[in-house]
Image (cartoon, rainbow over all chains, first blue to last red; front, side):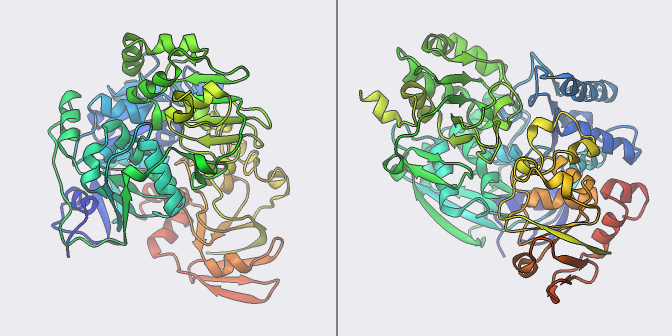
Length: 422
Length: 163
């Protein structure tokens, strides 16, 4: 029986000629990732395993991104645990303030993941790297600890949903609108335990930023991983970022899928997920007057240069509405620098937005933009659960950078067309 | 493994942000995390949960982030077992890895009511609602998972040489 793209990668990493859905395998790992929240727990568990050294210091990456620059003493101590461990284990892939970025933007940018890799990360959005043709999935700290010790992880081989993309997205429609639309179709557990495998002629019309964003939010549909085939666009990205030699896997023509979905990208409209689940999606014909108090543009979902360009196009020469706090967070130092050189930061600051050093901060309600009771935010982040960005009675509307920027200008949830056509 | 306790019931899609809000993730101390468990959904949880109580929920329990702090907080709060219609996959894996007993049983999850006395025999895959006098079948844990839970988690089970 044929294998899906994900199954091909997993079989190769398990040293097996073939695998099938439901099979339990032990796979060798090309990269193991943790951050300042999950790695301290993994380090504690690693110590309990009684192994002296990690299996391969070159394959471990720790990124201090959630609560850095440290928001308080406890957060500082979490980073200190990671810093000491990486120094002791001689892990060069330790990304601290000044060098760090939001992990899922940083790893591809630094060329740390290539096509065909098997990656685990103690962060649920590790599924992002599927955009590069890798198998990549989020795990907990214990799995990270065991991975650091052995270089391996066990997996139940997933079945897959195939999503066939056709057409091309219109102006102001990005990867965020596509993935929100898809989550709206299948629900927050629509791909639970499964792979989301993208295919079809529509892929060619998607930038890497679009693909990273789509794979990033696969977890919001419950997926184990999401994957795009490594086409010329992906290979050019890998070359430009100095990634290791790619290994290109393709799904067998007789692979079987649990379901097949078709998405015509031409028909997708700017889409917003209403509180308090990413599946509560609406397009602007279904959205009335919703006043907002904050806008956040950034995160592992939408903090890339293309995202900042999309926001700047709308904010250029315009002012953020009175009473709206606009926080823009480039996801990495390189993106920050590029945005500066392109003049995007000037546009943001002149519009009345605050620009921050990279941090996950507000996305998970850590710091740098916490909401008060009753406040509403439009955010380019990935979750709008109760209390995610602050008070349990605050509200998050998930949207693309273009929608977020347009809403910043009007002070209410607004489509980019509305702002750009007036 | 057999557990008995009073049921505390919640709905569908209980996410890791309500199980343990990220503002408390600047520590990984189980007792500290337990103080804030379920706080944004049910501020009375931490004060009313009793050791051995059984958490019962709907679809997709534990969806969202990969924070192991979520099952750690539930376990440290005294909950002995979580019964749900279904679990999000990272949470499911994390719960077993840290030695929190969990079981998927849609029928039991739908029937059990807040405050019911519940018995769960996970080795045999039997869940009994003592209050209603009803019994439900679940998939029993395979032997290696029983060992992980009995040893308090994957790392201890490896350290103890049982897997």
